[in-house]
Length: 446
Image (cartoon, rainbow, N blue to C red; front, side, top):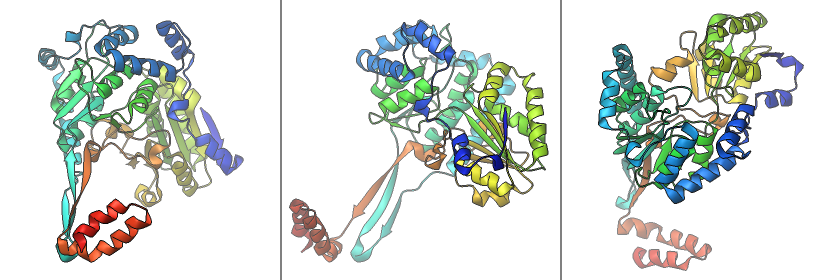
C-alpha cells in the first residue's frame, strides 16, 4: 500500500492521484480478459460484450437470456425455471438460520423506518386571482432491482433496493439475481426478498438481466426503472438501456476514504479499509491523516489483519493496487482532499467529527466518529447503501424513496388569473415565433 506525504506533491498531482477511472474506462484484468475470451471465443472489451448481449436479448428474448445464463453462469434453465417459485422461497426460509432471519427482519425494519421519513408530499398553493399551482408525487408502476451474485451473496442489497421502492408505493418490484451453477439462489437473498416486499424474482444476472428488464421477454416483464449495483458489465448494460428505461446511477467499484486524526484507533482504521478491499480487486481504500504515527500503525495493522480474512487474496490485491495513505499538514487539508475524491463511503474518525461535517461537500454517505463503521451502513442502521462511486457523489444522490417516484406539475388558473398575465405570455410566445402558442392564450385571456 502506497504511503505519501501531501507536501511532496503539487495540488494537480494530488488531484490526479485521487481521481478514479470512469466506470466505462475500467480495463478488464488479465483474469477477466481470459474469461471473456474463453466464454465468447474472442478477445472482446467489456463494452463489446455488453453490446452483443443487450442486442441479442432485445431481439431473441428468453432464448438469449437462457443462452447467456448457461454460457456465463453455467446454469442451464428452461423458461419455466427462470422465475423463482413460492415453494423455493418457503423452502429457503424454512432451512435458514433463525438468528440470521431475525437480523434480516431487524434490518428491514430499520431501513423502512428511515425511508418513510423521506416520503415527499404532493402539495398545492394558491396564487393571485384564484390560480392554483402544485406538485403531484406518484410512485412508478413497476421497477426492476438488480442484486449481485457470483463470488458472494448480498441479501443486504435486496433490502436496500426493495424497501424504498415498497415505501414509495411501487406496485410491482421485479428482482433479478444470478443463479448458481445448479440454478439456485442464495436462501438469505430469497428470505430478504420476501421480507422487503419483492413481487417476483428471476434467476438471471449480468447484462442479460438488465436487458431483459429494459425490453421485456416472454417471461420477464419490462420495467420502468432499473436500480441496484453490479459489476462493470451490469453498469455498462444500464448505460446501454438508459432512455428505454430510467436507471438509478452508473456505479463503479466500491470505495472508502477515511479522514482520521491521532485519536483514531489504527485497528479500527485498518479493519474499515479492508471492509471495502474484500469486495473487489478494483475496490479503493484510502486513509488521509495528519498523523504520521497513525499512518505507520495502520499500514502494519492492515498487513496483520489481512491474513485472517476469508477473501484475503481479493483484499490483498485491492490494497496493493488501490490502497493509499496520505499524510497531510492538518485535518483541514485532509477534508479538502476528501472533497476532491468525492468518495462513496467517507468516515470521519476524529476527535470532533461533527465540527468537520459542514465542510464536507461530496460523499455518498458519511460515517461519524469511532463507533460508526462503514458496515453499520451496509447492513443495519437504516440509510441506503446504494451510493454513488467513482467521484460521482459530486452530482449523484444516494438511492432513496424519490428514486422510485416521479413528480408532476399541477397548473390550474382561473379566467381572471390568465387574463392578468396573458399579454406577457403572448409577447414571449411571439418573440419565439410561436404564434399558435400566442393564439391559445389570446383566445382565453381577453
